[in-house]
Length: 309
Ligand code: RIB
Ligand code: CA
Image (cartoon, rainbow, N blue to C red; front, top):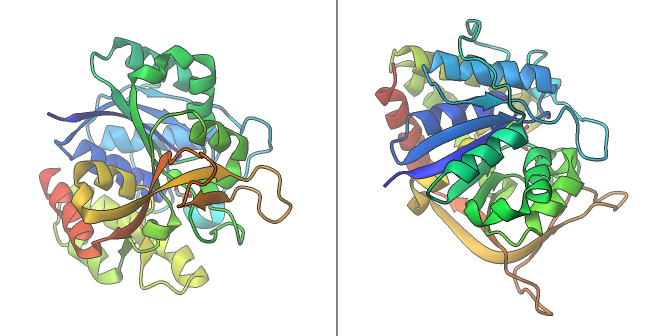
């Protein structure tokens, strides 16, 4: 039986590839997509989500999320994702409409109407998910778990301590990690190992199907930032990790921990504080994903691309 999921994302190159993987995976049933501000403004990430899903021929409802974090000014990342938030491939204007509902309203409606528990997959700042949990606490029982991209056990990518998605809205992340729901944290510990190399990109392009070519063009742009800034052997495919985790958890290794979020530290704001011992009765609320079989992960994406046009 497929896993019902709602994705909350800020496309964003790696978000876009996560959407492709979700749409192409029969193990998942994508019930809704909601958008977050982060990689770009909410106008741009919403347009990008609609463009990618239209390109894929998906009819999933798409709803716009909050324009800014709960208490802070928005941080965006044009240096990584370009001015459009999805620079690279020339995607046509979307045919998929934007829902008249807000992101929180759409998530609440889908949860309420589902006869099965739903897994939330946030791959952006946690503003919408935190707002959902605060405004509809009765719907927590309809959430199977939260399988997210964000945080890290060791070190950040936007500051020395913080990963981008958590840094954008630390208070929202604090609410989500303390909601009493099971969380799977695909942070930088694993996503910096989920590398796509130049050779992998050429392998995708050689599939010669329109979606595979579009993904290769996304990665052509995405690699510019990572090759200039980091000493990686490729680009980290952050956001496809939680989708791949749901499709095939045997690709990954993880460890239980208590995780909380630093909301105040001058140098450490946005850090996820990971405690593997869970002393003093602290709940081991999070599966911290640490390892990945990179070659099988790339095979999974390759197989997904071959199933699409
Ligand atoms: O730190 C990686 C995260 O930030 C990913 O979700 C990516 O899309 C970027 O915005
Ligand atoms: Ca993202």
